[in-house]
Image 1 (cartoon, rainbow, N blue to C red):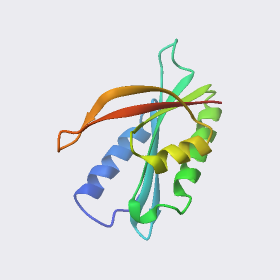
Image 2 (image 1 turned 180 degrees about the vertical axis):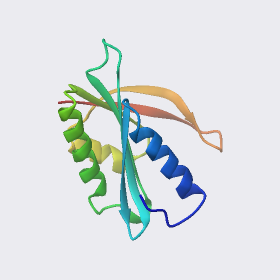
Image 3 (image 1 turned 30 degrees about the horizontal axis):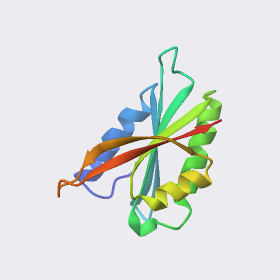
Image 4 (image 1 turned 120 degrees about the horizontal axis):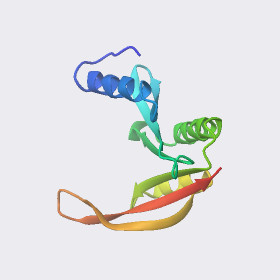
Length: 136
């Protein structure tokens, strides 16, 4: 990966390299014009009783919303999960993230639970995390 900026780009590069040298996680980036447009990650469970599960995360820079990047990245994570013989993918998103919720539903994820007061914002507002699962 070529970095065009110092500081945060170097930190991101180090995090990506660490993730991709791990046997428990993989991180992918979408780069447009030398700028990170999006990133996604899958974490593999290694314990015998949970190794059929994977946890995913996705972030798209607002400037690049609506271009299909999130859809493409989740499709790639699903493909990787199937290659790894996972049976289930899981994710969490913060309440109020309607764009994320709509994307995850479109990709076949189902709402299975909530974690109340899981996030505390700077203004002290408390938000819940929503748990979704997709069976593969």
